[in-house]
Length: 193
Image 1 (cartoon, rainbow, N blue to C red):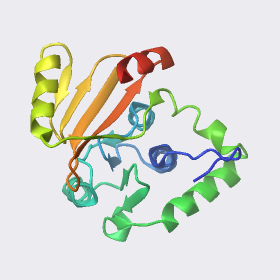
Image 2 (spheres, one colour):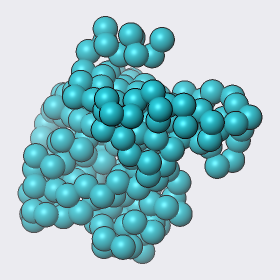
Image 3 (cartoon, rainbow, N blue to C red):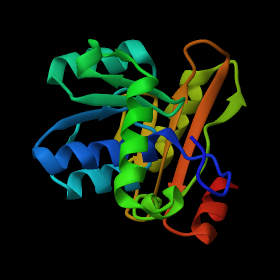
Image 4 (spheres, helix red, strand yellow):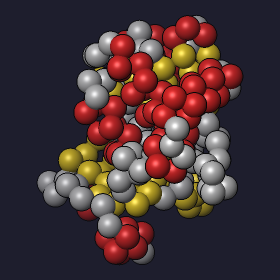
């Protein structure tokens, strides 16, 4: 999706708007995004009474987690939106319908609607070629063990209070993929070096 200025809006930000609409009707709904979504999306959904169950990257994993928790919806950063009502399959029409309804009811530009979600400086996934993906993951683990919260759902996720990253091996290419997010541009630039 594009906002009124022509800027591409991330799929997870649209997902957060969809989640907020459903949470107006009922609290404690489960949503299943992939683990590389923005922390701002997680915070936005949880602050409105939603529950997040993260999934590894890739639709087979996402659909499996959605089924396990009977999640209302799931999203991949690639722009694939999955819904319980479509048997956990991808739908392009449902998010479009939600977005049209949201925009017509709110009478605000999309850039304004996502401003509460877009709280962090966020990278796209950055691919680094490598022949030894697991060695890189192991080195990252040794570097950050005891300093940060670590998760190994898909590669390694390293989380500090004001920044986090996920480094995951690609299932289809000889690369590792980095997603990085920080509270400020200065911190983001420093960590991306």
